[in-house]
Length: 239
Image (cartoon, rainbow, N blue to C red; front, top):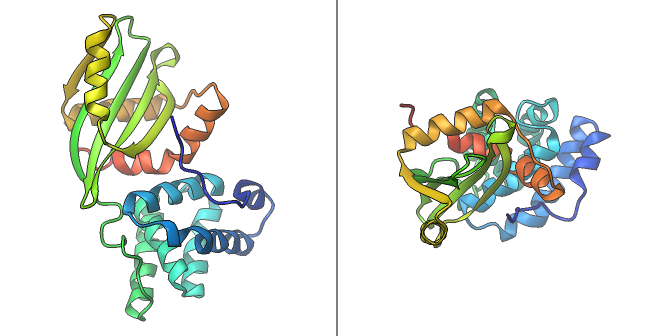
């Protein structure tokens, strides 16, 4: 379960002892380090989700303070930060970030190339894969941007109430084909395609059940993808 990490700065440590302005300065420094390498909306969201985890989540005061600080900065990197917050934030943060981004863009600040699509992929196929004892289940959601498809996969642990044990976000590639193959080779495993609405029900239940990672990499993965998972969940239709 690979995870997209932020740059060399220990952002979580920085935010833990910083004022909102200092926290924004750290994020802006991080943006200057990595934005040149980010070429797709998915890469931007993975980076932004990691940043939001370090800030304490989309509802944290540090995250809320990013919006006015970014607008005051007025730099292209600040606009990119606002675009990411507008894609991944809580409803209030998303709205404030979107409005601030619109004002900067109207002043002529250049947008990153991925700005037009970020946060709005189309919903694709969804499927589940689990053991016949019903202990663990992998739920995979697929989405598509112009540049290609990606998946958000959740490992659910029903021994802890169906909570989220691990999360992986990455290119779709042959994930579906490999899952089918694994299920066909192991009679103790089950596989089925499910509707996006059924997937939404499962994701909502998993989020409500909470997070139950056990290993250090699981803790890191779940935290760093929390914002993107929730942003993708609301794109799925309700039944």
